[in-house]
Length: 316
Image (cartoon, rainbow, N blue to C red; front, side, top):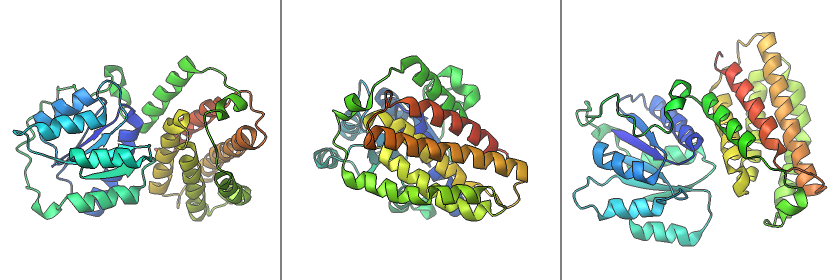
């Protein structure tokens, strides 16, 4: 069985991969292959060559959109038709209807909820019917059309993706003041109120991070990070950063802090404290006081914290 993820942002494919891996571990099933591609053209080629069972297909991609890919695949009468799940950050009923009319089997929204991924896999994959061997996997290990960038081969993990995002940010960053940024958005008061409620507990969380009961505190931290991830996802310019936080919350969730030594526990607490402080200050300066001279400064500080924190979590 092959599962294919299609998104021009590699970090989104990484989140799906981690969720699929967790799902398969829970089901005690290892007879599957995960593949990822970064464009509509590669998606069409991969589907015709490898016949995936299920495809997670992003809608918003350059050149050939996910809807165009869907249309092309469904029109191919010789193709073994996969289950196609459309993925997008757009909450647009018209797009949902168009995708359904073109033959999409389902539709999920970013940032991904792993429970939604699990439910999708339950719905479309019957593990009892999967053949024990993968004779249909006829690809050569040297095939690289589904690689995003040959230079990234040595960093095929979340940290490598984060560093790539940091490089992109440093190259393209330009200062945009809060008032100019908010002209394109109508931020609803209830969104800010919800974050205010969460922030009341933030510093209580931070205090507990330094204790030996880090494992007991981490659930609240994950919730807070996830809520900020959802808030960031509201804005096109921050959707990639939203996914980065989402990925970090997945890694935190899978980590076992029971036997973490004091030094490492302190490092983890420091980075989480820094991230939560950055998120609180950023929200206030951009959406409450509206005095931020550069709304994108958050990218650099959070990505840097993510990179270093994930590096520490790798050894837990």
